[in-house]
Amino acid sequence: MFKYSLLSIVLAAILSLTATTAIAQKVKEPKTDSNWIKPYKPFRIAGNLYYVGTYDLACYLITTTQGNILINTGLASSAAQIKNNIETLGFKFTDTKILLTTQAHYDHMGAMGAIKKSTGAQLMVDEKDADVLATGGSSDYALGKYGTSFKPVKPDRLLHNNDTIQLGNMQLVLLHHPGHTKGSCSFLFTVKDDQQSYRVLIANMPTIVTDKPFAAIPAYPSIAGDYAYTLKAMKNIPFDIWLASHASQFNLHDKHQPGDAYNPAAFKDQPGYDAALNDLQKQYEEKMRKDAQN
Image 1 (spheres, rainbow, N blue to C red):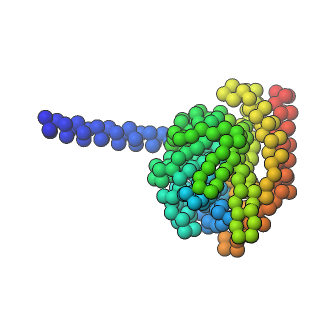
Image 2: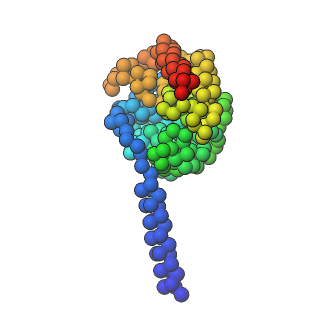
Image 3: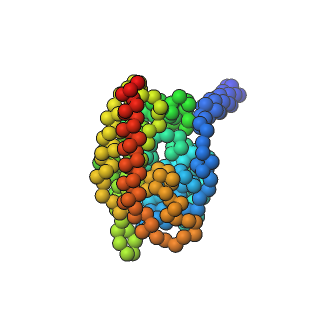
């Protein structure tokens, strides 16, 4: 009886490992930009806000009196880089208590599952992206054609427009900015240093990721209206500092070089934000014009 039970346990373990391996093999990231995996030295942006991402995939650490908040995780291979970046800054990786993302695409969700498991942090996401998280990206209206591109993960809390995320002495407000994904979102919050406070916007820029006419996307019938809504809503947000999901979107490397002294003023860039939004507005209008001709 004991031998049979032991054999059953061993077989079950083998089957479990095989199933886990099979699932892992099905997760495949599409071709990526080399700048997405290139290391970048972490640094303090303003107050208790830090950059801990790669050269282009922006990840942010917000420290609080009750643990820390991590926004975005880059590709699956970025987990070790993010951990190292956080520890290089002098913080404990295991003090990460809340995980957030600006969008449910593999270049921001790749390491989310692994980091959630290793830290035990709670994952909170915009409700409209929950289904894509559950399928590891395969149900995404645009990138779903690549199949499962990140490890499926279940959120601990679903967020809605203007919901507040609180941890310790910090409050972040989620702004629902759909289009790029159904649940794309930005975050608005205030940090401070010894000199002043800074109202920070981490903006998910509404870039267009599909070549199909919007009307030819049955999986996302409201996409055209969502883009229009987001472009309008993002023009009326007051802030001191703005950042984005990609370093290239807010010209990080023109504003900061590794080794530069602490300088929050470098990220006070209203003209840059306005120009980026105006460019995206023109792209949207051009796509709508082309869609109408087809």
